[in-house]
Length: 222
Image (cartoon, rainbow, N blue to C red):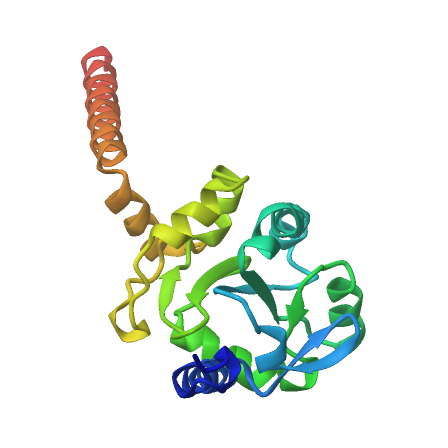
């Protein structure tokens, strides 16, 4: 029986894995020990979480410690690696924020172009956002990672992601876990919660009816 490292299928798969992730994240990732090839940093990993975040973002500062605890207790040992995709505006801010994180990052000098490509690819609308991908294929699992970690925590989020069928990015439905703003955010909220729309409509009609009655009473008094 050939040794796994000499097996052509295994070697081809490893090469394909590196190629997929390198195309997405670049040839190198930053670790606490310095730069490391993307292939080496993701070796043995099953999923990668793209963490779109920044030091100047208050919700990010709140979520990062929660995600860090989740990663240390559950994700890291179950094949999850997180890659910080920074929206920081300068190297000192990036460095100070990254030093508080237990995972990898896209190097600051490479961040702008790679971040823009990833943000466009996964239709990022706001931060923090945690997008989960299959390492071997680059296929999309969810962009609801933040909510899953906050809501489920423990092993539940990991089990949920493992059970979710990864799909090619061009077949993915985005927006389920991202912070939406403005009119589109309102539409998305009501689309997910139709009962709230019905309730809101009921309250508005009652309010209008009440205001009309008040107007009629004032006219009668006149």
